[in-house]
Each structure stands twice: as structure tokens, then as C-alpha cells.
Figure 1 (spheres, rainbow over the protein chains, first blue to last red):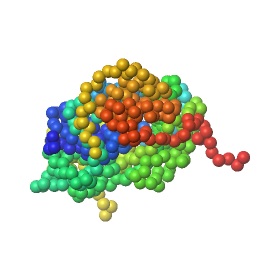
Figure 2 (cartoon, one colour; figure 1 turned 120 degrees about the vertical axis):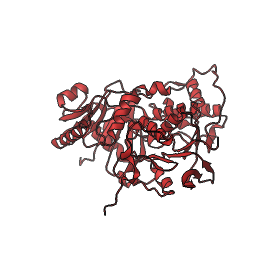
Figure 3 (tube, one colour; figure 1 turned 135 degrees about the vertical axis):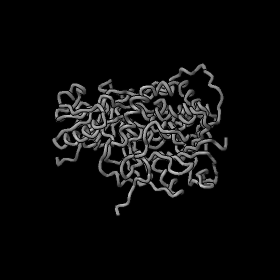
Figure 4 (tube, helix red, strand yellow; figure 1 turned 90 degrees about the vertical axis):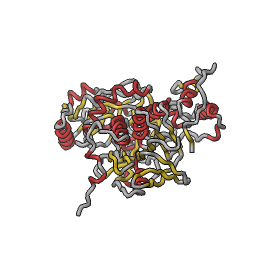
Length: 372
Length: 105
């Protein structure tokens, strides 16, 4: 019990999905979480998008695999409804510049055989009748969708726990330690040392400090994002929504409330470590939403929240066996939730020393080069 | 530090399990008790799983009750549990009010 096959640092959706997939193999797994709350970082603080469209070429195959093979059966597999809804993604544009951005995304994504296309205002209105007349066109990917990130994170936790995974919350991991050339120990702030055959670091931005103890530094920073949640409304539309300028995104949840995220431009000046909404975030997101969906203007906001992204220099993650005994999964840059089921499979394969289902060579940390 | 392996025993149904604790989202005492047995050891995890305290009143009505049900199942005093995080706005507020901009009028 005190010497498990694998220790996972971080109980977010990535860590929990990895724990679940390792436990399915019969391996003993312990998950260490710094917070007293399971999945309290980006996993519970994101817009819930499960999309392929708009993804980086390196990341798109992961999203396509997850949506084809894992998301549709996830609720049944985990025994908890994760509210997966596959009704498409509309990315909206109001100007010629917007439409040019959307055309660029369509060109890039369709080159990798994603079923995605440009549609005009009329067709977009047929898909979502609440659109403002200012919308000129949109990109449309019918196989995209959304799910509930809080439920998915806790569903993996519950399923992993049922398979015997040991979760310990309130444990602040400070350093990793090498024994005879292999990363084999995890040291915590209170002086406890945990031994394991393999160590997986999936601690979001906090991975950076932990990994620096063994000489790995992944160039990522914390970026604030803020969301608003409305009161319950009758079912209006089922699509995941976004805009060319990424000024807001969101969807209507199964419960009936709308969840929208937005950017106000001052995120880089947020106070590090403090997850608080700003005084202007809700206003700017509401303005953006009403500009595209005037019909929503009388819905009441009941709650707002903020979270941190582990934003990587090139906005794609690190997924690799970085050193003997060490597997890394972090730097998901704000779009990790949609690919979390497949990343859980890949990290489990890496940690178990197996051939990976998909090629992960694009996600090594040694891809970062100095400018001279 | 909390080891979640800590076993609180088998879930056994109680006669008042169908009592509604969160009126906005219609969450019963039994559902909350079941969540604790599924490993949700604090108010934050329970409400993310069940939505209790996430409706129109944002837990102003049921917050203390939910806490006492969770604490009772784990065998703690309710004061040992953190309160749910309070989030802006203080009262439900229509989007168009937030969206207003400063004008010269």
C-alpha cells in the first residue's frame, strides 16, 4: 500500500482518468492532491467544450479519436452521467475578417479529414434560430459537442476509487527524487516521502515547479479565465458556441442553465494564485453574448467563477515519458478537457510501459528551442 | 491531509432519505448521503456532483443543512467543514444590466 506501482500527482480530470485506466490494468495506484478538494483546478473551472474544430494540427488526432471512440460510451463506462451532448459546434463571425479567420481554421482542420465546413447566415440560423442578424456566417462541425467537466472529473474519481485507487487530498508535493538513475520518490512539504515504480505528474501549472526539481522546465504560465452561469432556461439550443475572435464561448447545459466563458483583455494582470472574478469580466462577456444572442439578455446570472489555465508557449500539451520512471501530462493550455479521456488512456499506456494507441511524439518537452 | 480510502461503511437507506434539502434543485437527503458514500467528503464536491446549492438561491437556504448532512455521514461536527464558496453576483441579475455601458446622459 505504501509502495504503489504508480503515484499520480494531481487529481484533475487528467490525473483521475489516468488513475482509472491504470487501475483497470490491475496496477496499484495512489493519487496525491494538493487541494483538500478533488479536481478543484481547471478541471472544475472550464467551459466543457468537447470539440475537434479549431484544434492545433498536433492535437486534432487526439480529439478525433476521443470523440469517435471514448466520449459516446463514457457515461456508461464510468457509471455516472457526464452529460455528453454531441450536437455540433458553431463558430460565429460578424465581419469579413472574422470569416477569413474561420476559413483558415476550416482549411487547417479539413486537411486532417475533419468533417467541418463554412456555412452562411441562413444555414446557421436554421441550426440555431436565436442568432443575431449581425452574424454573417459560421464554421460548422457537426460531430463536436460539450459535456459537464465537474461531473466527468468526479465520475473518473468515483470509478477509480471503486477499482481500489487510493486518493489522498491535502498533500503538497514539493520535489521528485531520483534513485540510481530513476525517478522513484515523491517528497511532500510535511517531509513525507512516497515511493513508487512510476510517477505521473499531471498537476496543471503546478507541474512546472515539481518538474523543475528534476531539471525539467516546461514554458507555461498561468492565465486567468472567467465564466458566468445563468438561471435555468427552457431548452433553446444544444450546440457548443464560439466566435472567430474567441470573445466568448459556451453552451446550454443539460440542467437548462447557460455556461459562458469570455475574455476581457486584462487576464495577464490577474493576481497570481488568486482565483477571483474581476469586476469587469461579467460585463464584457454579457456584452459579447447579447451581441450574438439578443434573446438571452433578460436571463439572470446566478453565479460567476474564475480559474487558471496552464498556458504553454506553443499552446499544446506535454505528454511523454520524460525521464526513466517519470511520465508527464500537463500544459493543456485551456483545451485539455475535451481530450481528457484519450489523454488518460495515453498516459496510462506510457506509465505502464506499453505502446501508445496514438502517436505522442509531438508532445515531448524537448520541442522548445531557444531563439538563438 | 485526508486519505480518501477511509471507509465510512456501507450505505444504508434511511426513512427520511426522500426529504428535499435543496429546494431550488430538488436534491434529497438520500442523494447527498449517497454522494458522501461515493467519496465526496466536502460541500464543494457534493454540490459539483449533485447541484445542491447551485440553483436560483445559490445555497442561501440549504447551505447549512447540506453541510450538516455531509458532516453527519462522515462523523464530523458541521463546523469542521468549510462553507461553500460564495460567488458574485449577490442576487441573480439580468444580463442586460451587466452589459450596460457608461453613457453621457
